[in-house]
Length: 157
Image (cartoon, one colour):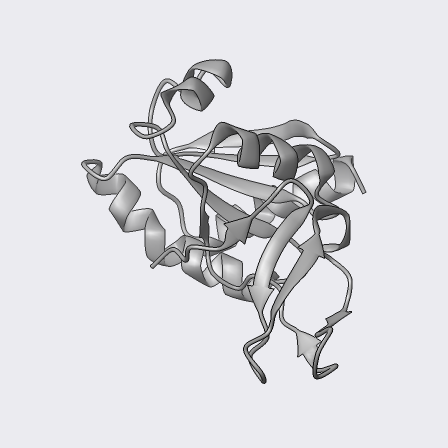
């Protein structure tokens, strides 16, 4: 299941697992070790796919993220999209702190589907340094998704 994570113009808001305090992690620091402002415990990076609900949040995250952003363009009525969801869950958990996995519902945010010329779903795209560096259409296993991330990291370290 995708998680709902709060985002604002400066970063991602993550609740501390120890004390519950909400902490903002700047987009530029998503790959860094971050500590809770209140209890000083380590804040874990997003380890589940994050649902994007606005074009502005998408644009800020992609432009400023210090780690690759894996985008799953999908729709709720799409069978193959539902099939790839557990694979994306694995990728998000295994790549936490090294890449962030986000889900863009093309029915909810059709402007992003149009802007990036998404013609079939699911389509997976990897953004690094603010630009799309690779994409693949169709459902695929976690290992193939991680290979896309690795390719993006080599292209844009």
